[in-house]
Image (cartoon, rainbow, N blue to C red):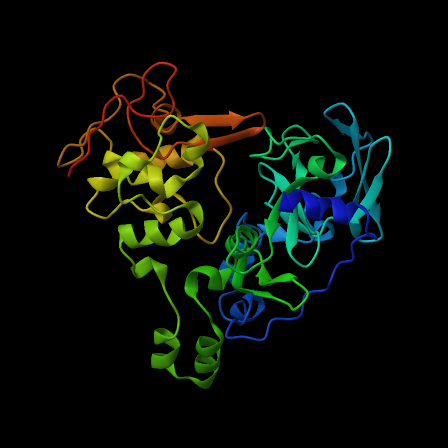
Amino acid sequence: MRSRAALVGWLMAASLRLVAAAPPESAYAGAESCGTCHQEKVASQRTSEHARALSRPADHSLAGKFVPARSFTLSGKYGFQFRWSGTELRLRASDSVKDIDFPLEWAFGAGSQAVTFTSKANSDWYLENSLTYYPAAGTYSRTPGQSKTAEDSLAASLGRLYGSDLGGDMAACLQCHSTGPVTRTATGDLQPSIPGVQCEACHGPGRTHLVAARAGDVVLARNSIQNPAHSTAGQMNAACGKCHREPASDPGTIDWKVPWNVRHQPVYLNESACFRQSAGELRCTTCHDPHGSLQQDDASYNAVCSTCHRDGMRPPSASCLRSESRNCVGCHMPRVSPQAYLSFTNHWIGVYGPGDKLKPIIRLVKK
């Protein structure tokens, strides 16, 4: 098996070395430049989960928690110990025969739910670590999607391999967690232009806009930047869906019984009556501030629901008659946990049956 051979070869090679990312030289100006005019929005966005979606481990806000006191064992015979070496987070993996010590290159995830690490294995492959850090538990456990990985060798226990080609999964992961193009060096290093999902991930390259604004060219400044606020609800759902998954052209192709699918928010929102019958008023930014952190309390979302679903609304829109507390999202957008330490909000807004959080029992969709 090609992937297994690559890992075995890696085990016998010297420790990996990180290759420093070259500074981006492109049409992308960077959030610092955006902040010269849009200070408040940039300052708020900088603290958001999007902006912290990708970083070097040492730069992560949870860096101080990445090295627990204890070691970890997989399959009862493969040991893992995290440690810092200067600013490098390293992982030592061993069994009764072999030992390998290598750096963890990228930290994926802001840490609101999980942080997964990747390393370059060689010029052809990247490794997604088999252990992910879960802040809710304050510990490491299996990386999502790797619970059934065969572990018949130390090589296999390290994690999952992804090709380093620009059309592959690792490049796609970096693209969705960063801003600007992902490039590949001659030695197979994948380089994101700007780590984290920042201003230009949604507004497009901003250097022309910046130069025009500084020159006082209002027309060029306005026309050289994208404003998602001017898009339709469907366009926004598709734009956000480029990373969060776009709505399916045929909903019949989706297995609504698979809990993992709930994390694809645009796919599920597209099926809800609230979205389809809102005449384009309900969109991602109706509930989520694109320049801020994700709200964690139900009250802020319930307030959005009540703008339409309230007594005395003209024309009348049904309001909740079953609960005095009126925790709309608690009932109509249930949380789904596909594995321990992770949970996702079901964006198919609807009426759910007892114990069923995956698909509404009442489908009110206006075709």
